[in-house]
Image (cartoon, rainbow, N blue to C red; front, side, top):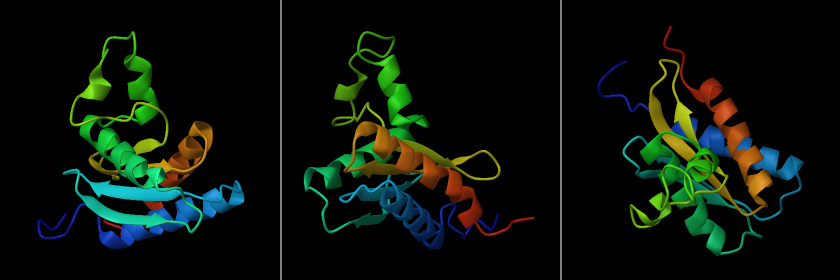
Length: 145
């Protein structure tokens, strides 16, 4: 990879958001917020639908931040918190989100290059939309072979 080329190009982030928005529409989730952060936990792309409740904006970004910081889905991190081995972790880093809707984005070399966070539906809907975005992410990357 060219050292001057971003590991997570903006175009790939936008296509990932478009795929996630299309999946949200197919699930009939009317109000949704979707955030993409890069490997350094910097917001790269964000979109929300017209019917999105305001709290979803912050939650989507925090889900993406949580997923990239720990390179694990927010739901999996939540399973380890509570009474688990990472009890209280949700209070670190200014507040983590430890329920579904955040997924790391991994490139074709296996590197975590960012994360997607989704909020606005139920936890199951947010998780499904984030999973769909993550699964479509690989196809958004430029071919490096």
